[in-house]
Length: 464
Image 1 (tube, rainbow, N blue to C red):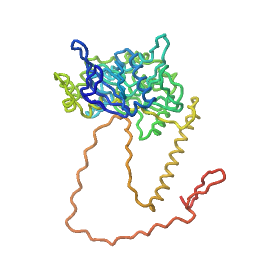
Image 2 (image 1 turned 180 degrees about the vertical axis):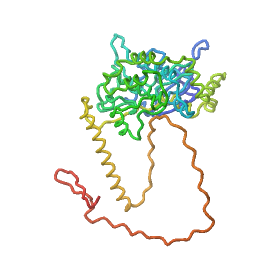
Image 3 (image 1 turned 30 degrees about the horizontal axis):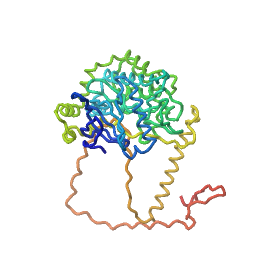
Image 4 (image 1 turned 90 degrees about the vertical axis):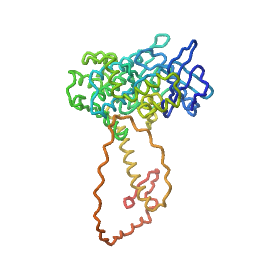
């Protein structure tokens, strides 16, 4: 952890903004000659991860990549600082909220974002992604950048009305020192294109698909693919069915908008828009985007506590860490920059090689494996439950729960009123019924299976 007393070259720490599994983000100030000052976000990699070559490579690759992308719709890296065991990324500070927070606040108020505002936000995202996709090296060769993690959590909407893409930590690009391992899938399942989900060769159309999911959700105010587990999400995505956003929204949308979303979400990459720029042009033809002022006013209107607290903080002549923590550090504030600190989301696929080609048989085999694993887990749970009855009690050690996938949610419903008081008359006691003791397992159920010559276990029917 960093503290204001730490010497970070020409940067001054003002306070902690957010922390995640991979790094902590601080509000900072860059100091220069003749009173020069600039507010920045300082992303500090956790010391234990900074010692891991793979994590260091990902962290540094992200900095190099975002420093190359010079576009108003991408949050850039301004500097890298290495001090002893510390590795810091100096990033542009954005005053605003993530699109996920904006959608949550709109839903809490029982409203949808206006279609023109959605068009303006998604248009910015598509333009920022296109700038990344078109990135070239010093020799003019394309780097083949693919973001791979486009989602509402990775889109910052500023009070200036500009939407920006962040978090290129899992982006694919030529020349990156960290290479995704065979069978390793990176990104959020609910926003993955089918070819990304099955470990196939990727190009920029993966980001077209993810942008289509974001557009659908921003219009509908709901999650497009919502399921309790990643396996269930895989089934929904591969099924390929989609209700038009206008139907879910419950109101008429500009003509052609439903069809645009449907094309972006096509299962076949060849049926999608070829580039995010093409999708952006079509979007502005169908819907006239809102102005910067309109978008900025909506951000301030939906998140007044967030924007007003920050404005008060920056107006103070000498802001300090304690005052910042008291005025700005609330749940919404942490959500704003948590996208800069989120640990890389990795899905390990149990195979030696990546899935070689597209096709229904391949996908069915993947789903079959999931079904087999689920069945095996169910059998294990039933069998473990039988053994638990006779086992002595043990002290449970709770493992930390994983961070739930980001979702647009509504406030919890109020608790139901308490039941009426019981009558004053004492109830008549009834004789307790004694349940017969459970029968002990047969002697030949230890173990409850037999093993053949090949080492395969065959469970005995009488022991199940």
